[in-house]
Image (cartoon, rainbow, N blue to C red; front, side, top):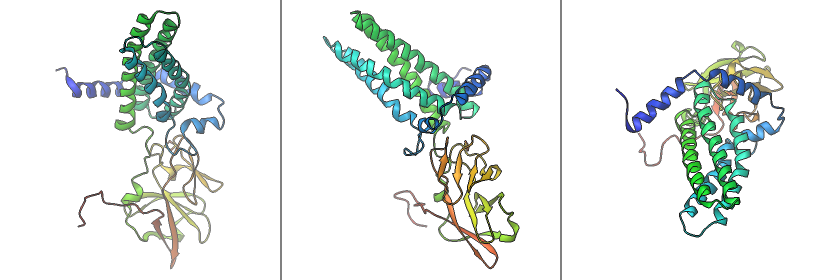
Length: 301
Ligand code: FES
């Protein structure tokens, strides 16, 4: 039986996530985006360094805000120049917003990319329609410009809803290691004998039930980072170790072993890091930054 209402929307989105019919297009576009000679601009488009989260959601505020304002003004009698200016500003900012969105999209997993492709399609059509609206208004066809503006805003809403699904349902762009400081209890935790750790190679262990990657750099230096990459949860213990850093095997983010700093994206958040010490030949670790483990209002056990 066909699903109706909000559950029907979720059902349709679930089908879109599983639909593999566009995967060849996705692979071609992904290859093309990854091959662009962006250099350091690629990390900036991701939102690293400085911002600490993806740049794309911040940039889309301008087109969405200006186009919403233009649509509202279109319902007021006699207002003409304001909406056209707002639409023009939105079109200009749509360019960097799209660039950052495509850069992020190329490093997502396939289910997210399927939804992302339709998200981009809706937004691209919206840009085309708003361009038509801008041109029509510039030529004095205000009624056509208003109609195109309204259509463009509906398309922007569809694109925005799909973007929200990607961000909040599919967790694209979120910090996948944020939970770690909340999950590890304060204090030192055992990691096993130092002699069991191979020199210069990462191994997977657990600290207080939380997976970590451990690298022994010398007789008395042991580096410990959270195992699951902050970008999309890739297993860092399977990554390459070089120059005091680990490179994630999934999308190539690079984290400094000493403090978890994300030296290279697409990860925009650093990796949770642990302090370590050796006591009687055995390694112990504790999280560097403790977090409040209880939500506000929760009573102590
Ligand atoms: S999971 Fe994407 S870089 Fe690690």
